[in-house]
Image (cartoon, one colour):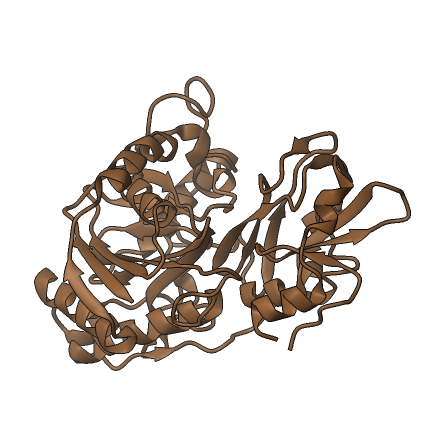
Length: 129
Length: 291
């Protein structure tokens, strides 16, 4: 059973969105369910700070031992930080997806888009847990 | 689930990758695709994120740009849309399977990336049984292989198809939009060790060293230990089975495991147009040598 914290927002592409201390800035990563499906993560490619993405635009890629998947921006926004440590140790995505394994921080263009994402109950239903 | 079966003639690496990608990009709910194909020339394919420049690349006139696929000693090079490491496509049957993802990332059979991988590999084991080859799924051996840890066939990943403990089928996946693409190589004959020759030759030119083994007799030292490297159908069976025999076995094996309605088909017009558009990307040196 995957760890699916309350208080986060989730997407059908298995990204999560978490509020940060800074208003309008949200942290994005992949869910525990997603990392479990992918298996041992060996590579994460992330964008540069300052780049902007539309909702559902590809912002990077993640590769496990065999499977590759694009990473999709859950909402529109500008990248204000990327997790550089994933370049040295991408397996953090497996061990701590909601903490040290975060991927990007987005300054969100329209916060109401975040509210429109799935809550934990909806995401649990989506993945059958 | 309705299954379309495409058996294609040999094509270039860029064409083959473009068609696989197009089939996934055009995937429809309730419909799966099995494609079986060959390569017009011996071709080395790299994983989507594999650092190929350091292992197989070379500085060319005009930097990494230039024309189409790059030739070196009779090989073409292409970069796949899927993960994993380098494969030399020559004496093999290549398959691709596209399965649609429903909302939430599960396939119509209630599977997922991982379940799909298991399902297809079980189908391949059934295909091999029909060919008289006892095969099994590999178990985890040590830590996961890094992207720069050498050719794909040197070591089976967990869940891959092995015979006599050695890798017989190498497969990789990608999630493309709302579909899973899995493709892979079933080795019909030997030859994967030539990948290490290409790698050694490049390393030699890069460092000014010599690729020869300790004997210095001009023969390239093969670094793959025989008991852990690849194995081919011809090695297991003592002869190389006919192409049509293997094709029918792969179709039958997957059909037995997955069920559903199966029928031979061709690319749709939408898939054909999409594949032509994607072929430009897969033929470009910028994509092939992006890392």
